[in-house]
Structure formats: structure tokens, C-alpha cells
Amino acid sequence: MPTTSAPDEHLRLEGIGVSFGAVNVIPSLDLSVRKGEMVAFLGPSGCGKTTTLRIIAGLNKPSRGSIMVGGRDITHLPIHDRDMGMVFQSYALFPHMDVSHNVQFGLQMRNVPAREAEKRAAQALEMVQLGHLAHRKPKELSGGQQQRVALARALVIEPSILLLDEPLSNLDAKLRDEMRVQIRALQQQSGITAVFVTHDQVEALSMCDRVVVMRGGHVEQFGTPTEVYERPATAFVANFVGRTNRLKGALTAEGILTGAGQQLRSATRLPAGAVDILVRPHRIRLQETGEADNKVQGTVSTITFIGDLVQYGVSVGGEEIVVEEATRRGRSPLAAGDSVTLGWSAEDTLIYPAGEK
Ligand code: ATP
Image (cartoon, rainbow, N blue to C red; front, side):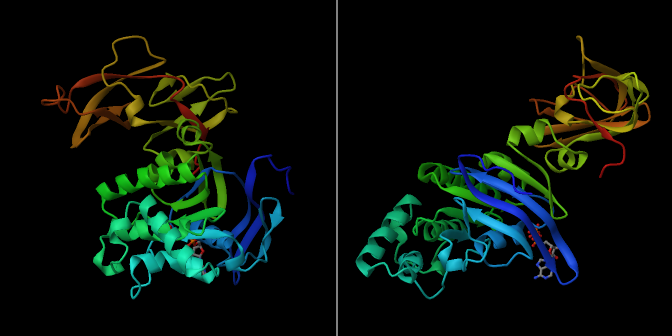
């Protein structure tokens, strides 16, 4: 059932459904994206991110529902009339054309006169800091440079919406970090509405205004990065976005919560019953000396150095709790077998009905 649109709404999916033969890949998806915001589709492989993006682009037709852009129904509009720019994981540059002609291509398709197309391509290439490589062929560029050409090619047509499908996944970690910042800066400068497909939570959280966490063709949560991380709507979101401990617990009708063999406190309210208790490893203090909502005794079982972080496995009441601390100079003062007092707050104690995947 369509809801009322927000005044700044730009893109809207209404009851979008996709079936491939008898397989219902997306049952019914509703989504509203504001003008100028960057939204990530985040979720595990096969959850329907690319399918949804291709439907917005017009590369696939939905089996049900409609797509609205600026209040106009574009569900049946062909791709080239949709005014959307796309950047794919593979960049899809034309190998026989130089960089400038790759960028001009979309303009030529739109019958922009040659002189103007050349000028606009040069401006777009300046924007991605590649003006000096305008006459190279794609194979003479690095992965990051090719990625920026693909971005310039998508932006040069001044699309109303920019669609990005895992555009950073072919880059090495350092370049990916740089490109995240660059793409976000370009998107904000141009004020373009953008939809970004990724299975990388860091990418989604760091680049986007809001994140759609998808699972099995439906939306588990749609919120800002902070909302999704700090207040995950489901145990699935908590597990998928960031690392978390998961303890078995129980909640009485009086609101008494037990887990890891002790009474614990949570700021979340739920009906009585079996629950899963989720706590992020870096929200737990390893050697609590002061007051804490939750304070439990445990024994260090493992210590793992992982660069910026040290991960401690701590046995508490028959459960293993992982605690993460920033690496300090020198060796860890703790060793396996040491007793520790873990402490964390009620706010950081998320509870969900037991067994939610
Ligand atoms: P990934 O991160 O692996 O790219 P995704 O979330 O983008 O995954 P989609 O590519 O949208 O997932 O696929 C969603 C589901 O639809 C998958 O189960 C996939 O196998 C199925 N699917 C996609 N395209 C087709 C097709 N043309 N025919 C049949 N099934 C398809």
C-alpha cells in the first residue's frame, strides 16, 4: 500500500517484486530515497542488491510494483530515457576508445554536439583528476584510474540518479580507502542522488547517508549508519553490521535478564522468554575496576593479535565472550589463564527473541 511521499523524496520503490521463473527472489520491496542522499544496499551474497539496482536502472523489469522518480512513474520507461548514470564492478570501459571518448560516449548517444561533448568530458575528467590521461586507452590505466573514468563517464551526462554496483571491489585495500573518500566527495559536491550496492559494511557505513540492510529479498532495516550499528533492528543486522558476541539468555516477566550464568542488565525491552544477548566486543572493558551495569568474572582463554586490535577470548559461565581492545605498545599485560572482570553498559546489551538468525 503506497505511503505518502516525503517532500524531499527523489526515488521511490513501491511493492517491487521480482520472480525468476518460479523463484520469488524479491517478494515486495518498498523504499524511499531522498534527493541528494547516498544510500547503500548492504547484504550477503544473493540477497537481491544487484537485482534491485538493475530494476532501478531499467536493465531488468520488475514482476510487480512500480518505480517513481520525482513523483513520475518510470516503471516502463526504457533505460536510455531514465536519466541514470551507472558504474559497474567491472567498469565496462570500451577498450578500443581512449579515456576521453569513453567519457564522451553517453553524450554522443544523447546527440550532444561534438565540441560540447569534448568540453564536458574534459571537465568530468578534471573532476576525477584524470585530465592528463585523456588520451590513454583503458588498458594503459591502473584499476583505480579506470574506476575514476567509469565514474566520470557516469557523471558527465549529469544524471538525476547515480547507480553504483560494487564499484570498489576490484581495487586493493588502500586504493579502496582513497576512492571511498573521493566518490563520497564527488557525490556531495554534485548533490546527486546515489544508490550504492555493496556487501562491505565499512563501505556502506563510511560512505552513505543511509543504509538498507537486505536479506533474502527484503529490507531488514533502513536507517543511518549509526542507527543500523547502534540500534540494529534484528539479530541478523547486529551480526552482519559489525562484530558481536551472542550469548544465550532468558528474560522473566519481571524483566530480569540472565545470561552467561549471571543476572545482566539491558536497556532493550522484550516480552518474557528465551533471548539472545548481543554485545559488541569493543564495548566490553576487559579489566573493569569501577561501576558497570554488567560486571562478570571470567578467565582469559585466548589472546589474538590482529594489527590494530587485540582480541581476547574470555570464558564466562560456560560461554566464550570476545573482547577487543586497541593495540598498545609493548606486550599484552594479560596471559591465557588470567582472571579478568569484564564490564559493559546496559545500553550496549542488545536482546532479541532467541533463535533469530
Ligand atoms: P551478490 O552480492 O552476490 O552480487 P546480490 O545481493 O546482488 O548478490 P542478486 O544478484 O540480486 O544478489 O541475486 C538475488 C537472487 O536472485 C540470487 O539468489 C540469484 O541467484 C537470483 N538471480 C539473479 N539473477 C537471476 C536470473 N537472471 N535468473 C535466475 N535467478 C537469478
